[in-house]
Image (cartoon, rainbow over all chains, first blue to last red; front, side, top):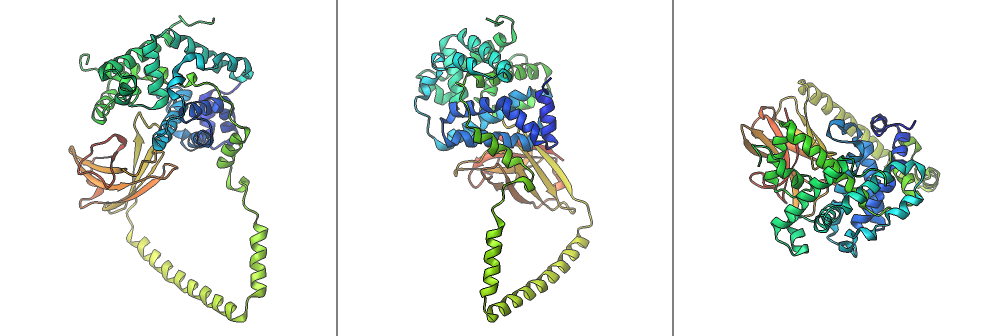
Length: 190
Length: 239
């Protein structure tokens, strides 16, 4: 029986490198993929990934289970690091606006190649893909742009050529609906 | 706003779309409202799932090695070969003229005398600092859960040092500023930056005793600091 994520973080907090190694095996690809999606492929994405896991190593003792799952905590650190790097560079990866198209994301092919240990993550990915597909296009685009590009709501309104209030409403409704969909049973196995 | 709740602001809060003032108001409300807190956690989980929308890319194998190398105990880290510089030192010693050796001996003697003097000063300072140090832990807000800080006050409470960790490195136009808070009044405790690892430190001095303040906060301000806090609060803690 593999150790839970919480158990791994407790062991990391006790400075057990093996636990960090296991956590990396579980989520290294996810963190790296997130970094690549935000800053593009290359050295920066590798630096962010490395930085995230070193931060986890140093800060595992600050993880609070009452504030969310370990994965949410890890992803939150990774997104902040990546968006921060992106804002420092002030350069968008080429084609970033096109990246919101779900058809561009090779989710299925990645699922086929995934090792067994990644199966749970791939199920979650599949649920998310279907949840996003059920959102109206304008809400989905706004959410993905805000999440991966680090645009402020005002920047997003300019990018999408929409009033600020409209963009805020899209984001709010989109996230609320996503939260309902992911919490419901509507997205059972295909 | 719903009966004083902040439910309709939580999505913006989770996605980082609120102004610093609104963000502070939401955080204050969340600290005391179980209803909004539950909704915030659920929205945060949903936003976290968005990471899975990134097209999967396999990281290079060397990346894991690099991560584990960084956290390995010092003894296991790859150190540069020591034989080479040791041999160079031995060679230099063999080739050095008697005059150089005499100068080196003089330098060693000088360092020994300096050490003795410094040791005496340290003993004297140790006797002066009889009172124990006090510490205040500062925690990151919802937007920077991994950030933390430690404010160490001297025994007499007149000065201290703040060390922070996990804060993002800022551009040249912005710096972090420490605020000393008493009855809602905020006094600047110093301005500082962090390195690319998120580490930073600042010596804190105040006309009043630092242990007379109730709480402490760190915000992001224009470089050089502001007369009062204007930017996002990233760390906070109470004595």
